[in-house]
Image 1 (tube, one colour):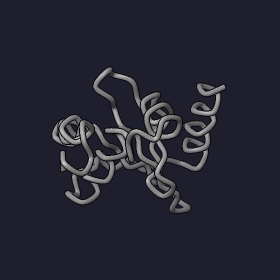
Image 2: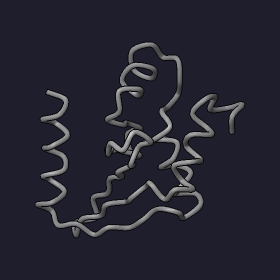
Image 3: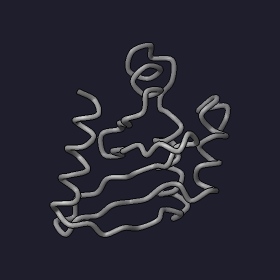
Image 4: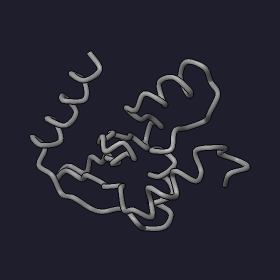
Length: 107
């Protein structure tokens, strides 16, 4: 993993080991992931479009193209493969509020 994903591999595995990845599922079937980062901040990840709200994703992946992904997205993919996600059912309203909160944080 480290050969392919570089320095994100070990921290991502640590996040999976710590059960830091939660899959949020709404009644309509919409899914998003939240990852509790090593800093204690909660990041929202979208595996369907390969996106994370963390600063490292914005800088290293989007701006500089130094990495394919951040440790949070890799943790999501690994936890999916290992079936190690925590599951949380949320209402459509709760999911919308999470998405709106992320939008406000970016603005």
